[in-house]
Image 1 (tube, rainbow, N blue to C red):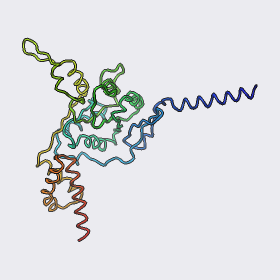
Image 2 (cartoon, helix red, strand yellow):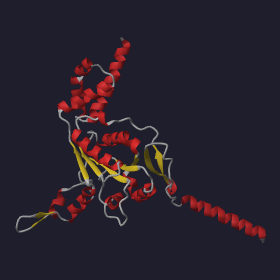
Image 3 (cartoon, rainbow, N blue to C red):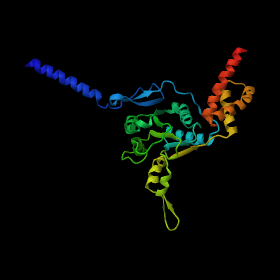
Amino acid sequence: MSERFDHLLARAEQLISRIEAVLPQPLAQPDWQASHAYRYRKRSAGRSSLEPVRHIGAMTLSDLKEIEPQKDKIQRNTLQFVRGDLANNVLLTGARGTGKSSLIRACLHEYAHLGLRLIEVDKADLVDLPDIVDLVSDRPEKFIVFCDDLSFEDGEPGYKALKSILDGSVAATTPNVLIYATSNRRHLLPEHMKDNLSYTHTPDGEVHPGEVVEEKISLSERFGLWVSFYSFSQDEYLAIVAQWLSSFGVSASSIEAARPQALVWALERGARSGRVAYQFARDYAGRHADASDAV
């Protein structure tokens, strides 16, 4: 009888262990000394973690050209934040490749020594934002939760979670956490011609957005600071090309000679942006180095 009981007890313990293995586990504290930046990763069986980013891109604020007004706004807001002063959640929107994500990484590089940390969260994992915020709420560091290339389709669950964290939850705002998001969409949701039909007109000529439009702008307006980025002019694009070529050690005469090739590169890519300028500079500097070695 005793052996049978022991056998049943062992089987029960095995069953409990298997159940515990598939149950969602609480988010554990990572090694906060391992890095200044972390990625939130959700694994199978409900397990998730903050993984340190071992190699952070060495982007600095001085590397970013032709976006001085945007840089000033983001830098001022971030500095207020790390100093413990009031600051806003930030939505960076506009043309692709103009430095939105790079500017956030550059701020991390600038202020990491003051305790700034970054947590990158994919759009699909935004439903877990409350858990992430709870995990870091008692830490002495200042955390930017970074959502890159953010946009939603109608009905996606992360949309409601982000709205709640930004403004609308019963819980108080955590003073050591801000949300920085980048997007090519000003209001983060697709806009359709049929949405215009929901506008109403009053007899005195006032125009009021309908519920559909109100819902689509309700998320973006919860970001306290909007920063817009625009496509570069030809001169601005060439200035960025020259800055990157110079940083890669290309001589002034070679930079001048590279201008026509840089314009052709942008024409082939269909855009004049900081990203295109950086990619051209890497290509040109690589070919230029090979030519120097051959000589």
